Image (cartoon, rainbow, N blue to C red; front, side, top):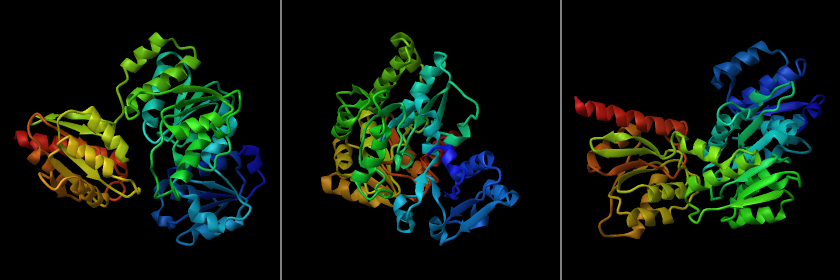
Length: 431
């Protein structure tokens, strides 16, 4: 939605987390005298200290807090939705209100300067790869979106020639009516079915990265995924396909996509490959933590779907112990169970809630010589078991195949705890 259309409308910011706070600061800067509605399920003293401070200073806000916060939707013309709030939650309260988001407001201004990157897995790595290539070769750029600060924090009132590399989640793409100038679609697997009604709705959200492109735009896509290929066939944009023979080899696909984007900016193949060679990878994505007591430890906490864990197992040799499980996303674990048995992994450490379902699938695969399995509730307990049961020369892998929210703040918190306890326990062993 264009910024000038917000001027005379009654605006409600729905969700007062990190992005909601950013939207409030942005709107207040653009419209100093405007009355703005703020809605969240949390009561005031449960909100972040920063947003509490902003609200107390601002006399031109109307608060809708607590369990009945969604009732406020009917009193406004424009709803600026935080990505984490599913549309199905407030659908019963909608009439003629327009739903917009930081993503849409940003793209209305910066579409021609934006490279959007999405996919179930690998979007963060690909966006970072493109960013590194651009920085190494003098392209003025910012890495925005699902990484770091909310996107409206990068808004510049005066004109800029910067290129914005925008990592886009399905939550950010939902309801969009505008697509970036260059769209990259890496892959699609079943995910976030706790948020979306079904896989069809999840894909429809993802498809918005290219759905609204015109013939002057570019759509870079993985031809090995039929749904993405079908989307490309309908697209008006200039289409560039890529694909690896092994569709599960995420990093190969990340590199192929980044190389195509770089070529559009006339960066030579030699310079691109040099940047990629020096790319240090991404924390929590098959990250080597170290070798302790003869055991190789890998942190792959960003593996929040079974396909990502399967890719990790295909990338590593001699995995003796794997940590799995977490919060529910309605994933299927039967193929992952088959690979675990095929690879001969001896020790399975399982977090709630999905740990039980994963173990049920593994149990179905074999009745004889089943792996040792342990149900745990915290990372300290999990890492103790890693040291106790993993043999020297083997690998211990954290690659949960699930989201993290039942036990941890997010996948970063989960990965950081894993690294912390592995190193602490290794240090204590030396004493």
